[in-house]
Image (cartoon, rainbow, N blue to C red; front, side):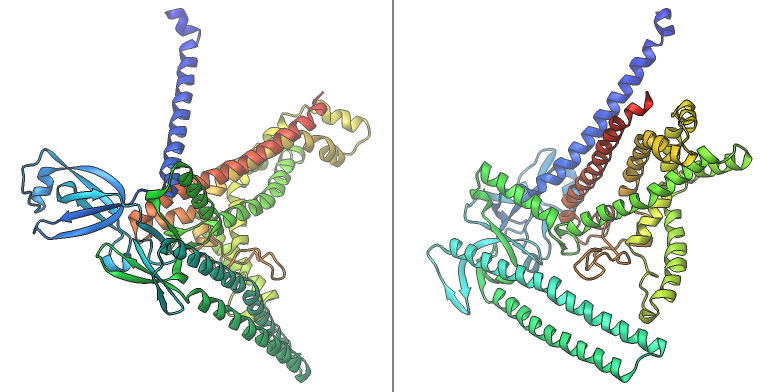
Length: 550
């Protein structure tokens, strides 16, 4: 036994076991997040309960079961519940999503199994997804087309066809609003700033003013035409309505312009549910958020996260590599160099929120404000670059991740044998040529490793971004079809901040909880995808320059 301990085998097994347990824990956490998030898009069964309260009043409840728990009977008795019959130690309680928010007050309610008279699963209950006020549950009764009530024999097919028409018209209106209307408004604002610039420079002559006025009049005329078309589409989309009988046995009229989809969950088979699940996941990834980010998709957050991380990578890589090359190849070893290395290492331990405060003070207020004074005086006092934006977020995270790139690059440079450098110099190459053609290509896998670590950290950071650019809801993306096409001064959405906002700032906690898991899993997926791409590039570079090592 003593020899076995001296051989070091127990410590090897202990280390291997710790690594295995850690991997299992990480995989278990990811699987839990994926299950809780992705199961949200699986169509749930809709039930109809016949209920009786403690006073004997009967009522109907329609909804889906969100959660089930066992509650101690004593706890319910102390809360004032009265049971007609003796109960066991616990009573089953269901959390039911009832929808119909504008009529029942809350989307969710707890019901006790002891208050249930009967439970059924009708196949003709419709789950209506709406752009506001959440889902609606009920039985389609009739369609109101152009003010006339139509009681079809097959009201469901007519309902779905009218929904498809309304959704198509709404999509055209949204495209028109984001496309032509947005471009015209952008051009009008540019003319205003141009006129203000001429005025500040003292060059606003009557000829220039008349020319600008003519251009503005042309744009406004175009705007009126497009606006008329836009409101026409909106009016057509809201032309029809549908009559739904809800759980109160009351016929409710819903405008079709607020309805996005209808599903009869209790009729769906396994393949139908799987198709519905894929459609739900696709909409979550590609749509804009709505209802205070508790519904809809997260596409602006995905775009903002990826765009900001890529911009950060473009900024941090050259600065980190140049700093590492100077420290390792040019700087003489001494107390100054040693202090610089210590400072670089210590920078990695600074809390991220401190970087956010620095970015807000230096980049946004000082640097951005100076840019506005020099290049955008016509826009003042409204800031252009003097307010938080995606550029300042990328620069702040570039400084935050700079130590990682420097240290990783230096490690890669130190592993290159000095004989390689000496051989290159002996063949007549200059030091700069040696660095560019020999040393940096051989160190490129280490540079990519630093970039991978930088991306992994930056993509999940939220605290500094809250100060330098991220917002709850960005009206436009940093990239659009308006010149100069890339707008680095704009604010943006981020998956990490979206998780924080939905999880802690949402007015409807129960409805938001599944979206927190879904967005968390999506953020992990984005980070893993970015890292896998960088790893593939690193492996390619490693194979490409392997011959230089021999």
